[in-house]
Length: 272
Image (cartoon, rainbow, N blue to C red; front, side, top):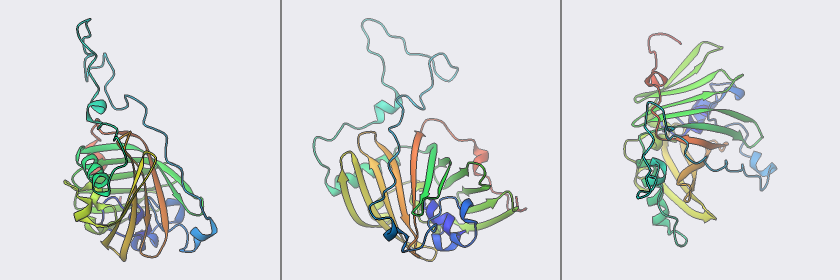
């Protein structure tokens, strides 16, 4: 289970060490321990590719729906920008400094309260899992894995539950011990909430490396890959305290639609 929550590293309650031993390898949500510490050496230079750019207009209500009426465009007026376009910062004129890169990532995280999208979880040994991610800040998150995986991870603002529908089991952890806890914080400051260890830029992608020493089992190392042009988090890579590495790539992100509140409910009175 520890393996799952540490890869999940979005809440910050468990580390891979705790989750790894609880769930079957194929069912581990955002596991970090899919391979051993030496696995990376057997695959030199192999990096999980970033997902494609977000489709234009995704998450913006279509014209004619009950949610939003189409804007009226006349010869004297310009079409109004979508919410996504209004929120997107201008393309930087040159390379960002380390401080600017961290500030841009903080602004992105603090600019939304809800997020949902698709994820692909990949281990160094090539094992690949897909599913759907839901976040509602502060404190709520859900990872749903596509079949045949029967595991799901739910954070309700207080605890994190790892459920296995096939085995009819549920394990509970404190949300404060997971590696990616900062993703569900009400207010995020990466330099304050974790130990910043490095910033680098490659093309449009800024990589920010942090260490979280409060995760279960020891220190987790996290790399956040952020597209400064699309203004989106594209990927994170987590190395848990035991040295296991997991990459999670994101796509089709939507910060406009609110997830169903039922997605974040944990039943403490029964197993499932």
